Structure formats: C-alpha cells, structure tokens
Length: 419
Image 1 (cartoon, helix red, strand yellow):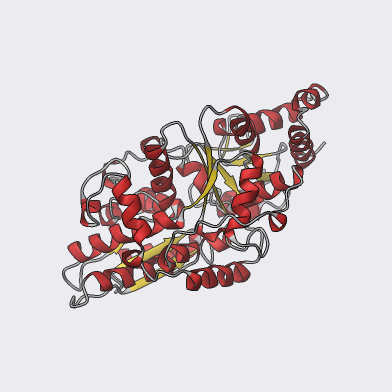
Image 2: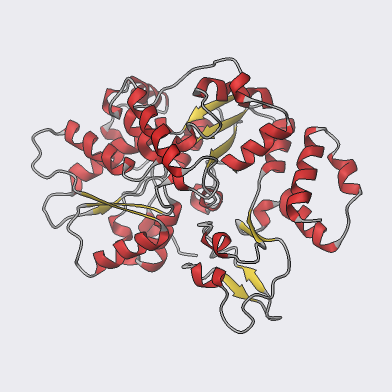
C-alpha cells in the first residue's frame, strides 16, 4: 500500500464515519508510520518521507541540493531525514525528489476531528489566493460549502491584509525619510521571513513589527470569539510551520492547503458550485491582490500615497519570487546593488498563486486574483469602512493606533531567537 492509498482510504473512511474500523485492518510498520503522520502531523516536519530512501549514497541527492535551509540530513545510520526544526515548508525538495518519496504533510484528520468535537465554533480563514481555486464559483458559494462541512463561517484573510497594509504604509511614511532608507515587507510569506532571519540577519531590523495577515486574522477571530477554533486555508505548506511558531501559535489552530480542502470536498461529496450563495465580502482591492507577486508592494504604495499625497518620497518597490530570486535579491542588497526602498519577497514563483498546493495554473490564478481585486468596491483599506469597523471592535480607536505595540498585530522580529 502506498502512502497515497493510505491517505485516500483513511479520508474516505473518515467521511463514512468508520475510521476506527479502517484502522484495525492496517498494521505494517511503514503504514503505521504513515498513520501516525496523518493523525499527528504536528509531530513531524511539513515534508514527510513516505518510504525509505537510498538516494545519493555516493553524493548529495537532488533534494539536499535544492534545500537552501539545510533541513535534509543523514542520521547515524546514513538514512536521509527531514529536520523539523530547520524545514520551513518551501516544498522545493518535493519537486526535486526523483524517487517521489517525499510528500507534503496533511492536517485533514485533526481538522475533521475538530469539526466533530470542538467546544467552540470552527472558522475557515481563506487566503487571498483562494479565488478560482475551487472552480468558477463566487466566494459566497464556497462559504456555504464550508458550512455544510460544519464550519461556523468563512473569513477572508484579505480583510486583514487590508489592515496590515495600513500598518506597513504607516511604518513606511514614518521611517523612510531619505533616499537611502529602505524596509522589507513582513506580510504574507514565512519563507521570505525565514530566509532573512537565518541568512541575512542584519536586515531583521528593517522588517516592520507586523504579523502576517493569517496570524492577524486568527488572533482577531479569537479575540472576538475566545472559544473559536481557526483553520487557515491556502496554497502554502510553509504556513503550517508559521502557525506553530511559539510567539504566534495562539492565532491559528490548523492549516489546510487548497489540495487538502479539495480532498475533503470530494470525500464528503460536496460541490461548491451547487451551493447557495452566502455572500459577505469585506476586503478592498489592495488586500485581495496579496495573492500574487507585486500585490503587497502595490497595496502599500497606493495606501501610503493616499495617506500623505504631498510626501516627496514614494514607495519604490522591487519584488522577488521563488527562493532563488529572493536569495539573489537579498544578496544584491548586501552588495549595495539595490536602489529600491521597499523589498517584497515571496517564496513561490508568482507569489501565493504559484504555491505548491494550488489547484489551477498560476497564470489562471493571477487572472482570478486580479479580477477579484477589480471587483471590490473599495480601492484601498482607507476607503474600506469594514476595516474601521473591525479595528473598533478590537479596541483600536484610530488607524494610527496600529503603530502602537499590541497583542494582535505586533511581532518583533529582531527580538526573536532563531531556530
């Protein structure tokens, strides 16, 4: 039995409410390891090895060469292992694995257990790149699909991307005073942040003290409903790692990829396109564009300009997508070859719409994100009354108060101990 056979079988049995019976029929050592991974994904790195591997006995295999975080090592017996403390979930090694014995982790079973037995409401927090991933259906139908599974509701993380856009625009206008000043975006991508923190530590002080939109959304939901269980849904494996980081682990309980959600829908025979419309879209164009390369810097640039139209120093952004290009950008910065004052990095080519677990081609994902951005009635977070309403409900009396140290939107990167 392959790992995929095991996964499909246990998911189907969970949907039919006979998981216990199915588990009793299994028992080999390899399958047992696979079951433990599926039942307890938090015990393992976000990349799993599904079978023993003897690749690269005479040298470094391709997966090791592709891992820029040195997360694939050999144990005392010479077996390749994934170091949970070093793996950030970029998924480059999975793409490089010629033997196809590496796979991305899955949190499906713990989420299904939470939907069945959680004491509080369970909310789906969908990443800005979600649009178009589950077919040509509006967000309201997807919301109904999640509710049919037992979720209390669906929250678009793009609304909190709006709020983080405000914060980064405020920081930019406050700190960038000369042509020599610059800052790095802290929003969105944990791979970008991990790269800075581990290999270019001198620039951590240039990262605004902001959490990602995912963390902001999870914390806000829990602030308003303390018993809530939060499940982030996106294209990214690295978000599973981010959600476990000690200083922000209070925000998101589980992370599912788009692929995992598709698997759940199929197992439970749920077709989003057949669902009734339940529309509650609250984000601006700025927040919706976070799903693709350039979206963050475009949002911050437009918002900073709107905040202070007379300001002489504008956002001059440079973007990098994919781990190789991100590293090259930071290397050029270190060599004094970058003239931009705002650097945006995304670990996947194309941004989140090019993540390892997207369901549609990245070019299609970009089209969907751009069209969804244009469809918003609000151009920037400053135009969006929903932003002010949420901030007020969370205890913020003004947009400027986002600059104050607070327990929801603040993260001090320069004070964090590296793994």
